[in-house]
Length: 63
Image (cartoon, rainbow, N blue to C red; front, side, top):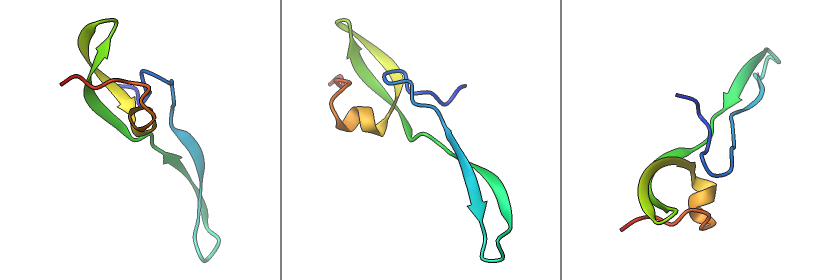
């Protein structure tokens, strides 16, 4: 399953790890996705959204 936020479309970012000996290797910054029950178009659906969308109220959690 792809690590993509279903609200904002945020995907993993890529960067590098640099050690003290200056050895360089690639790494991925993963998106912090949570599975939540959300109200979408009046219906309750289970969606995978990032914590930034939950915190900024872009998604309304179902009770």
